[in-house]
Image 1 (tube, rainbow, N blue to C red):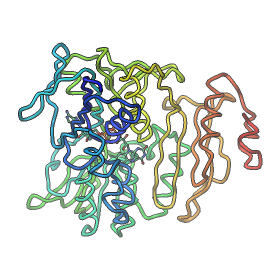
Image 2: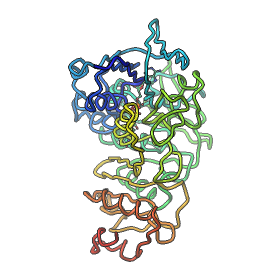
Image 3: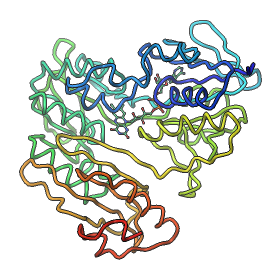
Length: 416
Ligand SMILES: Cc1cc2nc3c(=O)[nH]c(=O)nc-3n(C[C@H](O)[C@H](O)[C@H](O)COP(=O)(O)OP(=O)(O)OC[C@H]3O[C@@H](n4cnc5c(N)ncnc54)[C@H](O)[C@@H]3O)c2cc1C
């Protein structure tokens, strides 16, 4: 029986998966899981998909059943905000009053939404989406709303727009850029998403910023853009990105650079403190660079990887980045990593044009020269392992024949 105490701050996917791994790997000491939220740890992807559509039960999002924590001797401190970290004393102070000592600490504090503070931003009917409660509020809003304006055409904005359309709302998406998702996807695939949403009746307003959210009697009544355009609306969803929740780490003096800096073992600048999930900016030896990845798979796998490092197992965490998105009938998985804009072309395997509102089926490969940097399978399944292998081969210097890459008749395994 160990007399060590391992503390995890952040009771969401990364944190609760880390707790699970500590027990699965045989750690017999105290495990304390500190979470600001009162809901049992849950996964966030359903919040903009099945749950927001009203199709999935709340419990389906839970990482474990609520009783799992006690059954596995995990001290889950719900509704506890960690407000101070003292690296020298190895203590965490909780709000309003409590102190927990640790031998090893994992910071899995995730992200917080970026908020607006311009005119009208505090009106009733201005919504964000990060938590289950916020998804509840949106679902209720969509059931009543006539016109929804979404600010920001990133993943959250687009998935929310799709859900709002499926609830029968009129939807306008406002985006400063010229296409949705352009920075991450590039023009070629961003165009597919624009066309898909347009075919489902979404009105896009590109190239304009928000001037003001208009209100009547304290509630949203419309939106005005800086190009003079205005529209009536009863709900505004803001999806303008997130920032890593580094307050605790920063206050303690840990190294921060767009997230909590870690090495490939997810160790921070303090040898007893680890970080994983959305909040960590970790060195990935496979890619040879430090990355902060704001996606589900990195929380799912990063939590267990950090737990193993806390137990002293020397296994570098070097995943090929992966994420997924579902919008209308289009499901996709993206595997690989492209620095925005740093590719030569996108090679399509299959027809990517959106015809009427039918979701296309294709794989897109981002290539530099004849090297595959990343691939996205859209309504084509069971190929991510092959795409991941192509990305790894590319990192090892292997090239592919681009005609064969584009040819659906050539199995991807033949290119490896
Ligand atoms: C609506 C939505 C849909 C998404 N859909 C997808 C998708 O389709 N595909 C995909 O790949 N990714 C998706 N993501 C991203 C994915 O959910 C995140 O990458 C993942 O949730 C990160 O997990 P995490 O555990 O690192 O952090 P988080 O989920 O952010 O959890 C961090 C937890 O720590 C708590 N916390 C923070 N600070 C403190 C503190 N000081 N004290 C106590 N507790 C604290 C927070 O309250 C929170 O509960 C989606 C995200 C959202 C919001």
